[in-house]
Length: 282
Ligand SMILES: NC(=O)c1ccc[n+]([C@@H]2O[C@H](COP(=O)([O-])OP(=O)(O)OC[C@H]3O[C@@H](n4cnc5c(N)ncnc54)[C@H](OP(=O)(O)O)[C@@H]3O)[C@@H](O)[C@H]2O)c1
Picture: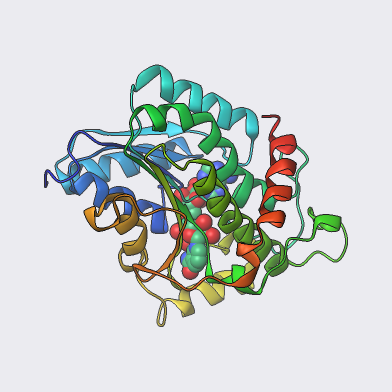
């Protein structure tokens, strides 16, 4: 175990698998206290035991929440704040792909609920703790697919003409817009927020969608990055001194990438923000 992140407390959502697991492992390796957030208690316990054993860092804990459910996100934030006094790094990572339209327990289209509102709500609930721990960092895992996506305000929850990739792209664009807007609103607080594309990574993503995906995903492993490689930009943004103070950027392969037109649209970002506040009851 190294000491680089000693004294830092980091929360990684969706850290029981894939990119989130590799991110949590690396932060624990760097000496941080790491909170692994996931929806499955058995997987959580196994993950924590594995990270502790592999890194020699005992300060790794599991917190349970189905992050598509707003009441569980609120409970998570309350529980975290009752147990920890600081939060230096929040990695919003948990996400999924849904081939068929489905609704969350709150009646919200699942992709929007899990991939976007699950970043928006916990960030807000934990913002005071992040500000009090500043300099602090928020890292939002997006995807390159956001570049071909649109926020369809007339059909935000895709009641009409649902497509899994359309809903996924929109959710990842929402994450980028949220990142830019939040960076503007956090100016002067020493809390930074950046978004990233991890690359095409061999993980469990999309395997919840039946046999074509179960078949495709193992085949993809031949060309995709390993989770360890796919987590590099998340780890970099969470812990590297090189990006201390850098905010409001979208990173790919550890480099701030040129911005596409859509996320620059502040009017769209603000409209989405207002809708998100209403959808999360903030
Ligand atoms: N893989 C890629 O090529 C790629 C490319 C671009 C962006 N991304 C993004 O990277 C992030 C991580 O995905 P991944 O590829 O590492 O996929 P993954 O292996 O499926 O990991 C997703 C993580 O999110 C958790 N999760 C899913 N639904 C949840 C819920 N309702 N409540 C709590 N946790 C939940 C999963 O928990 P369980 O372990 O219980 O399933 C798992 O820990 C996602 O935001 C994804 O959109 C991935």
